[in-house]
Length: 198
Image 1 (tube, helix red, strand yellow):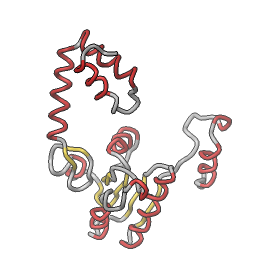
Image 2 (cartoon, rainbow, N blue to C red):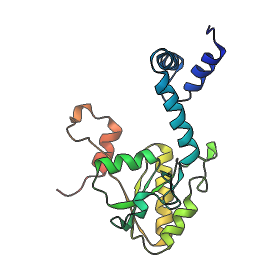
Image 3 (tube, rainbow, N blue to C red):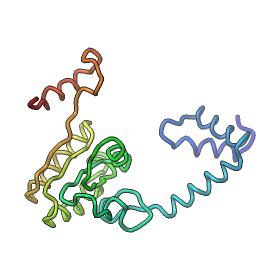
Image 4 (cartoon, helix red, strand yellow):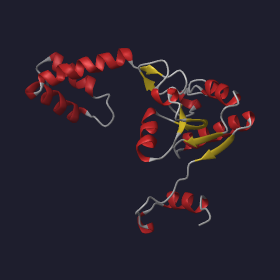
């Protein structure tokens, strides 16, 4: 039992973070209080400002502090190429790893009617407006391969078809440097189905 009610509240509050259970939350709380109170205050301040000041880009829905994010505002990005992703983290991953020069659209989730996640929840009416504007020639679907991700990809393809926009799907398969013997069957099946001329 924790002697301090406020400490117990801190530990409970930390547990909502991904991958942080009761023991990890306890270690984090004690670590901050034992050695890093100044850093804890700074973290608290930055977290409060981020929660108050970071919103969503009016064009792509990623996180930003301005009405339009830097990627959407950049004249060096190809406005005719749009990549649809599930999360702002996906934008960062593509930006860091790929030579993608188009723009993005962030769904902030994936379709899941059971959980109440509908096309409207994911901002798809805004995406449909962008596609109908005539500027976009290709939409790259970069959703996950979960059942919900595949259902979302199928819905996105239908939106693109209605707008007369080419829809493509990122390839999935064997990782670079990977041995086939260690690749799971589903990934190997995707890799074989997505094979291309060499």
